[in-house]
Length: 236
Ligand code: MN
Image 1 (spheres, rainbow, N blue to C red):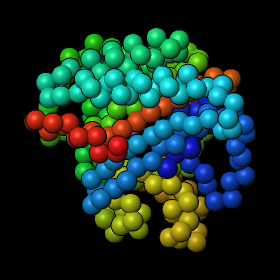
Image 2: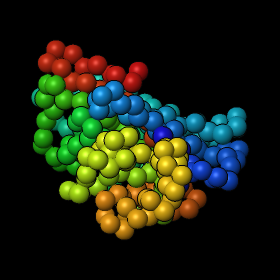
Image 3: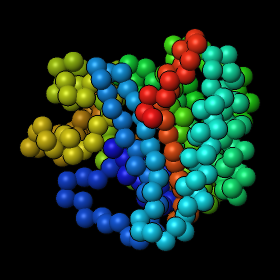
């Protein structure tokens, strides 16, 4: 689970002993995934802490963009047409789509496969085809619409070509991302262990993806299964 706040778009997850608190008016992206035998879903929504409703339009922008994008998905549709739709809806609300973040394909035990689904028309002529699982995730910003890497967000993944099947992290999480909190549950010396594994380049930590301070970002996400005759939203 990611809990990313305000100018953070994604990849922050609370760690054991985390003292961070929510404040009224915070824009919180709740991004969760589920795995059934490695078949994955990815789902996110944005909420504002408290009831001031200052950011309702920002939150509505990505929800609307997601709904509009879902209607365009079918085998043979160009991937750029989804980005075009997302960009159009977000811009019509007066916000910027985040250009260097987007949706992705999902394969078994692979949360981010090679397909990239942009939040704007990036000119990519690739098309969807039947029997594909994808996640569509519009991001809207009050800032410039480009994120950069911040500090580590306490989410990790077994990396590269060095994945060992006898590795306890592999046995628990396979090749999907895992939170530091989950590692704490399976081993007492989790902190040293993760550091050692990162040093050996067997584990990578995801950086928090964020915009400049003072900006606010919203996100909405669903996972879709594209079949030859229908599209199923598996997270609805
Ligand atoms: Mn996703």
